[in-house]
Image 1 (cartoon, rainbow, N blue to C red):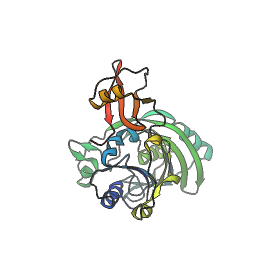
Image 2: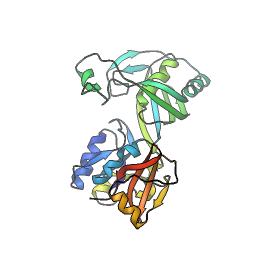
Image 3: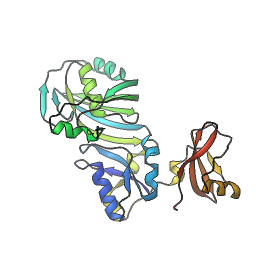
Image 4: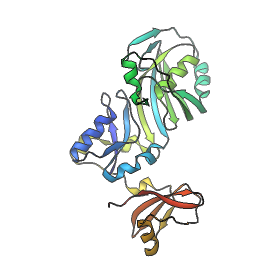
Length: 280
């Protein structure tokens, strides 16, 4: 089962998975991209055999609406942390727009110390809590779109569409640095992930009352080439046999008798089994 869930503030993404796992009596639950406890909005959750689709769904672009509070810096880069620096700020709206637009495209981003990324088997926030210095990893990210929504007093609100693995807290810190000041993330709302929108997300209370909608495979695979298998081809797929199809797409979806059977991935001129979708 694949669910679009609205995560509230002051709970972790793991909390959401635990609630859903308990309700549906399964320990096999995964989400497709962590939202900070402070953040709210769209979280795609997969259960049971559909957890194998987590990496596919995680790879989608994500859209956020974020608010910056200017003049302070915290150890967590958001409003919940301990203040470690204060600074004045003085820039025009035009300067702000230039700075925001300068982040469009591909760039490098340093992962924040308060994150769950593991270094030598230990999560970064564990190093931070124990005051242990560690070299922070740097990631390749891409900003597809960025739009100023409001700038008033010490608050900046903007909308941004980003690639997988982008930390909005780090983006905010970099924006403020270019503006010659400091600032933290005051709020964050995830509004989109791939084709999924926050307005279609199920509230947790509705899920617990069994008033929810699931995301269908037709929706998940709507942008993938679809192959309707014949009986002989279907038997080959059941045995994980490599297949030759008239495509060059990275991943294709295979169906038999109107059921999604598998995903095949293009590799060295042929398609190989990537994800088996039926329950064995």
